[in-house]
Length: 495
Image 1 (cartoon, rainbow, N blue to C red):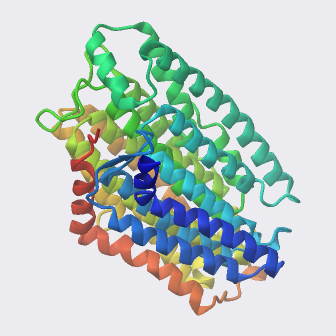
Image 2: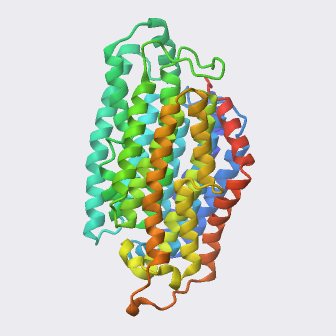
Image 3: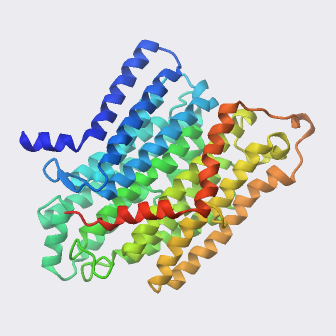
């Protein structure tokens, strides 16, 4: 009981989210119609949870009998999840797809439930806890993907998501059972200690690594576990698509990085700033293959897409490939680069999806052909979309450039110049399809029957520019996010 009480003191942010979910449920029952009240309650709860998360920065505690840890690494991701969820709930208030759905306010507490699961994924150091947290995120994602139940595309998206998710989840839990049978422990720090003492290479461990990657890889849309991504992104409402691309994917990276950067190490402390990987267990080579495959397939297939949602789906697959480059380096600089890029990834992706919501609300379409001459009709929105597209491609003076600069620098410092070149060449390819969107918006004239000006409310423009400003500002003055990333990575090896 004493241990539980101590643990609860460090579990306040998650408790706040649980209370928020319950209050939103009650508010929904009272209101019984679409209302901003539930969304406001949800956002307020997220802010309170975020306040307690900030208070945990610098804390290093193991709670609930070693199932969960509180450390700067988990704090970084929790703040990322909370900020992105606040924006997504705001997006849902503006989304025509959400407004026209037959549901009332369920999306709010479903999104907060996913955030709760994501927080647990970032904090878990026990394989059972990792699996339960991942399933919490996955099951909520399935419901959100099929939120527009009258739409066949939405129902199809949810069904495909469930099938792929169940298959990858089953493969992963089986691999975890093998690892448990081999080591006799579910705690990744204890597993690391046992494996380092055993020494030598066991072929089963390679199989286990690949099978566990099937579970984590599906969550981050990594090739070859990406097949669900384009269809689910296309069928789900745009706010949900953005939520899956940012919050759900970041949660996958949180658990993936912690698992591989702890489980297969000789020691939880770094040697000369680098992770001490157990001899013979070469998981970095597997990550290289997945990273390169994700970048190449994501970028090259995106070139042919005319659905903006599918284009952003393949873009997310490629972006996941870039993020994995930092894990390949397996040192302090690589981890810092991942954190910097994740902040950039959140800002520019949220911006792109919100701009798409604004466009889709007026055009009732996400087809790029229908966006011809959009810059003549709504110049501010088109310019905002242009900024986010340039950031995603890594153009200088944007936050996307800073993220890629740190990733490629980490690779070059580790003498992986060829891998940095692969990443740079893929960035050049990505520029082609990002520019394609702007070509239709700025260089094509609108059809005569659709040439009238498009107007938005002040709130819509304010939210758009709230995302535009950090996209540009952090591309020039990026010191704060770099310092935050360094502090979050420096105490990574908590036991």
